[in-house]
Image 1 (tube, helix red, strand yellow):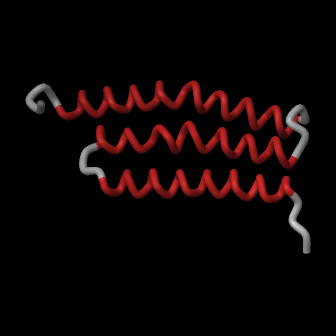
Image 2 (cartoon, rainbow, N blue to C red):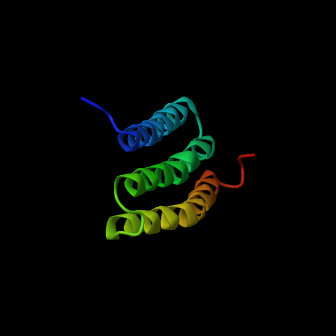
Image 3 (tube, rainbow, N blue to C red):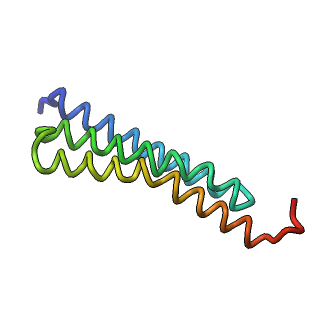
Length: 101
């Protein structure tokens, strides 16, 4: 059974996405405070969608409906993930109160 180059590239891209998610999950579990955990959410919410969109683009035509949708969703996640992380960090700081450093 021969594996084409496209299938190998798709497997590598999806494998990298899973690896990034696992590393980010391990980092989230290892950190103690919510603000420290936010640093591990960034790569999971920004790198993985791009890798998955690239894998979809390799498997389909990048200008097909599936390819365009994948790139649009990845772009939305890349643009809005920092905004959501910032809002979450502000909410965590507000919840801690002014007494904490």
